[in-house]
Length: 115
Image (cartoon, rainbow, N blue to C red; front, top):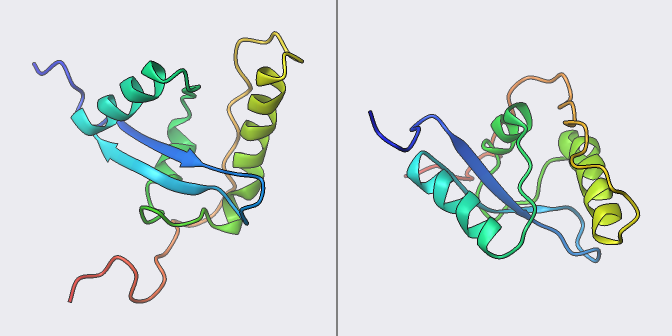
C-alpha cells in the first residue's frame, strides 16, 4: 500500500486584506496534497483540516477567488487564525466551519475548459 493516500486533497488559500476575496493558490490530490501540506508546515503556516470545505474549494479554479457562497465559512476560519496570530486565543483549533448547503459549484463558462 502506498504511503500517500491518493484520495487525500489539499488546497492553499492566499488573502491580503486589500483583496476582494481569498484566492486558491495551490490545490491537488494524493502526493501533491501531501506536498502542499508539508510545504505549508515547513514555512510555519497553519494547516486546518476540513474535508467538506476542501471538497468545495477544490471546485474553484487555480488562482481564482473563492465564490461568495464560501465567504462565511472561510471568513470564520480566517478570523480565528488572525486571533491566534495576535495571541488573543489559546484554543488549539477552531471549530470546523460548516460549508453552506449548496449544490456543487459550477465553473464560469469558458473557465478551465479546453478547446
